[in-house]
Amino acid sequence: MMETFINRIMWFGFSTVGAAFLGTGILFVVLAFVTMNADIMGFFKWVLLIFHWGVGGISLLLSLAILAVGLKLRFSSGKENPEVSNAN
Image (cartoon, rainbow, N blue to C red; front, side, top):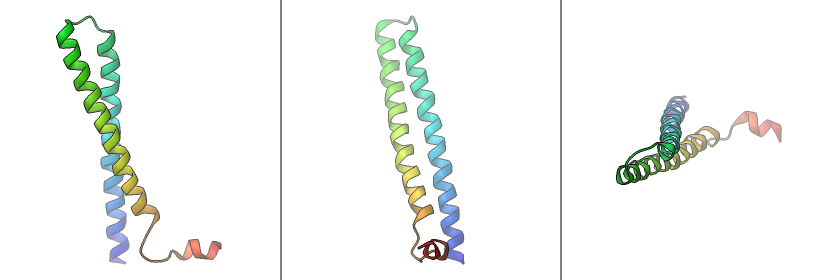
């Protein structure tokens, strides 16, 4: 009973953090596209582009990893699920 409760809380936590990183990644990728079309000084523009693509890419990769762990917690458990075993 308590193990199921902790598993659900951890799954919800991983899903929430993964969604936050996904939103951050999408935001910074959009900012990178906006920066590419902006009329900014050359060096400063490249610094901004590297920063936006770096933060966006790392955030997207982290979101994939965190969501994968959360989904693994959601769909795999140590005990056999009676709903799944009855379907076979």
